[in-house]
Image (cartoon, rainbow, N blue to C red; front, side, top):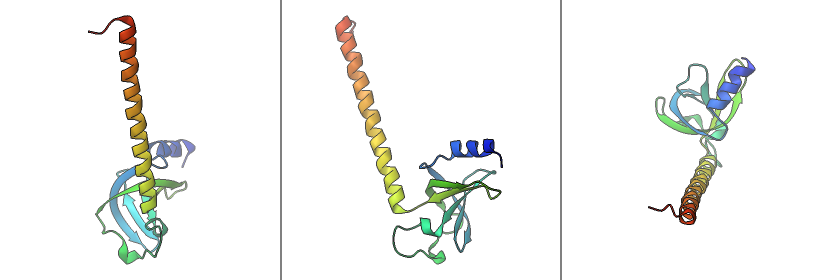
Length: 127
């Protein structure tokens, strides 16, 4: 596939982003995930399920079940795969980053409100 194709895929499925799909197929090395895109499909390798311990194919989620996973890479060849992880540590890191960004946004909005109030006070334009 072309560089343009992969740039579009990487823009749509950014590293570190949570995406949702459905378990499509089981393989000895992992599962394939339908992510609602005809041009690529997701794959969760068996090593991307648990942080420690052993994951076996009989522990895979059922075919057809919904799954949320974090984008961790791409197979940039004719397989057109988006690599996904459902490791608890990866999901927790994403959650922590999301909460931190939310706090930054809340702080920025609060700061903007205070700045606006300050300008209104200085200009005497408070209603």
